[in-house]
Image 1: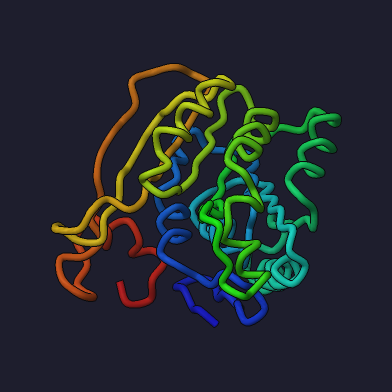
Image 2: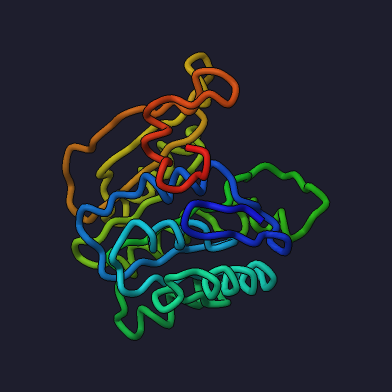
Length: 237
């Protein structure tokens, strides 16, 4: 179990536990356009959807999760939260979900994803963890195509990915008419390499906002920027 200031995440049956990537995306994702509805692709425990329920007034927050036990745990976490009337989880692949909603002409003002990203030919020995973690379970091109199909005219698509995949992901998104709106490159401390890229896209081509975020000044000593970003969620921030 992982407790935040306004909600709790049960994660004993979920392969991917609460981590910094999910918290970063949930806290960073732009909401200036005041989304009416939100879609979380590959929801896992439901962490990011819950963070956005706390941060926004969105009336409908949908999540999609393919792994059965993670889906069940996500539903439980949603039901136990104070925003349970706004949160819904679907047990389906993103392909199935996108096909059905595209035919119904359903669109979202915000689409978010913390996608699996290990593309190396490696197995941890835990099939559920591998499915949650490896890019083969949700290829970037499939994720981007789903976002393009379901994003509203003025919507935003936000993800967190490895820094080394940044150029490829931006190129794939641009090829389907999704243009970079904002990018924040994340590193653990001042001397470490950049490890993650937070990316936000829209249908409007423009000059993106570009910046960096450092998480720690020393072990367990967080920068003012990271503290400001996450203080509404972490208990000890």
